[in-house]
Length: 104
Image (cartoon, helix red, strand yellow):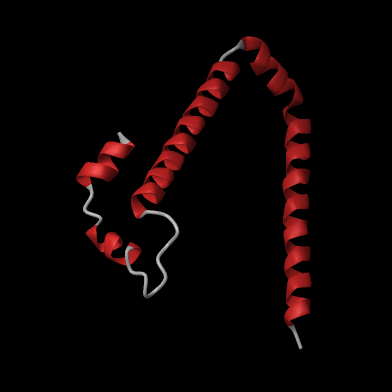
């Protein structure tokens, strides 16, 4: 599907002109190949997301998983909040260090 779309349906003449321009430094890859890679990556991410959310829906439809989740909800919320907070703190510290190195 992606190959058919890129090879036959899209007008890439504007990209071809830049790709074949050796005076300006042509890109290393044919634009058609790059578009196929990008479209394939988007499709992979989408399918991965569908599979993940489907498996979550299936898992949480099981009574045993629902009971375990409800039993541990408070602890899991605290742990995940701490992890996200630690990532945020690391981001702030890294940003401050970067700003300090850029100041004269």
